[in-house]
Amino acid sequence: MANDSSFLFAGIRFDRKKFGTDIARFQKKDTDDSLAKIQSVTEDEENKETIEAVSGKKRKRKKTSAEAVDGFSVFRSSTSKSNKEVKVDDDDDESIRLKKEQNKQLERDAIFRKNHNIHVSGYNVPSPLQSFDELNTRYKCPSYLLRNLAELGFREPTPIQRQAIPVLLQDRECFACAPTGSGKTLAFVCPMLMKLKAHAKGGVRAIIICHSRELSGQTYRECKKLAKGEKFRIKLMTKNLLRNADFSKFSCDILISTPLRLSLAIKKKKVDLSRVEYLVLDESDKLFEPGLFTQIDSIIKACTNPSIIRSLFSATLPDFVEDRARELMHDAVRVIVGRKNMASETIKQKLVFTGSEEGKLIAIRQSFAESLNPPVLIFVQSKERAKELYGELAFDNIRVDVIHSDLSQDERENAVDNFRAGKTWVLIATDVVARGMDFKGINCVINYDFPDSASAYIHRIGRSGRAGRSGEAITFYTEEDIPFLRNVANLMASSGCEVPSWLTDLQKKKWKKHRPIRDSISTKPAVEKENSTEKLQKKKRKKHRPIRDSISTKPAVKKENSTEELQKKKRKKHRPVVKKENSTEPDL
Ligand SMILES: Nc1ncnc2c1ncn2[C@@H]1O[C@H](COP(=O)(O)OP(=O)(O)OP(=O)(O)O)[C@@H](O)[C@H]1O
Image (cartoon, rainbow, N blue to C red):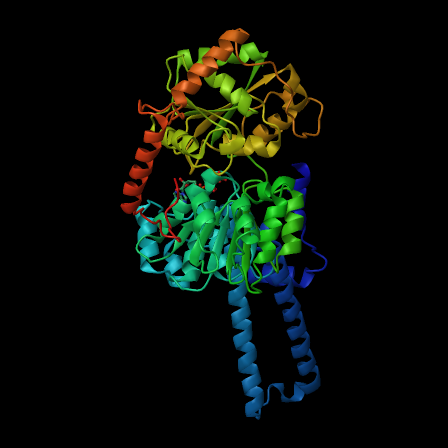
């Protein structure tokens, strides 16, 4: 973190020697927009660059006018100026006025960004949005979108929206990092809808990649809500679509997919992505991890449109992702809200020592018995442990459910829907829902198992305290986790939580995928464990349709004939409802 912040503020030093003339000029001006203000915000390399450029030109101009005065001092006060000279003077005045105005705007932008904790780098970064109204006054936002924003109750843009939306609207590539729950989805969907304008035929026009099916589904629904009233063709790459669509004729305005499904569509179905104008990689640091990178790479390579605008969004932006972004993008703008890799400041974070695995179970039962304030999300480190904890809590008289990658798509969706609808009070989960999922109003996140990395901690606890609401996060730790405690303590301290000094004084240890082999959560003896798992499985198994022996009592030959007859009869009336190939409906 220390490195990150020093990198972030690397541009803050103002070379007083180099800019001596400019300092003198600003001081002379004696305005409230003082140099001190500029100095305090010149971490914005963009401002620095522009100020440099402008002052450079000014110096040049001053020199030119000095030369002119030296050379033609006789004529300076003369009234016999030629028309051409008058025009040159007028032009000069106009450009001075314009530059002054430009400088003032830069100062205003810098102060505004500082007030909203927005840091930018890149050349010529557009001014941040003061309000959603500016979408209309500056960019002629269509009325359906303004109406939808108002209907969704979005009155003011969040900091990431204030800066990322104008950047993308001005066709600049962008990589952005802003806290969890700070409205990054709208920050990339809104400019996409505005730029695409309306539905148009001819291939895929925009793509949003999300790391999980759950997040893809959620982003699809968000897009639909924002596009309501306009005939955009927004599609979710479902299993059905991948299997049944005729990709040679495939066309849509926005396609939302996981990396795997889209890379399969490229490889096996030869989907044409050469016309894609916008590509968003949400949770970009996850997408650039080794497991997904080959798929992402194939997608990026398939999007061959030279004027494509790519953007990367996440709440955590490790240096390696920044490096990739710089390699990949042209003239990209970097937007950071707050500090990189920081937990949301609206979450009250606590650490609880439980001693052992048994201690964790006691602690959680005790805490639920004292006060259970749903919805509560519990994270464990593996699907096996998720099943075990579910096995323990399922009979505790609380409405608990579980989500992990061993469940079918339907079961996963049901788990999410029931939790969202309040039917489930406590959801036990693996990291499958740790990122991006917007469960409104989660009161508490419990890290039953210590997270395995800083980003896992930030994203997990970020399921609460969203959109400015407050939330709580409790992290259990055992002896095994102590070496990594300081990392969490530092994250807590940097997001404003009180941390005892002994925690931050602990020895530093590099946090590399900390997933120790833990004792089983289950308290039941082995046989009972098997039975109860079976019971639970039965409870969950909804579509239990085994192949059973025939009911028919007729002899085999007769049976065959009658079956054939029946089949013939059936075949006549066989008119299945053919599913539209390019159905926009997800198989949710
Ligand atoms: N301008 C706004 N005003 C109020 N609420 C907003 C605004 N923009 C977005 N939201 C709401 O904030 C919540 C979080 O938004 P979103 O899911 O986009 O966050 P995020 O930054 O992508 O979080 P994460 O990093 O966890 O993925 C959503 O419920 C969304 O509807």
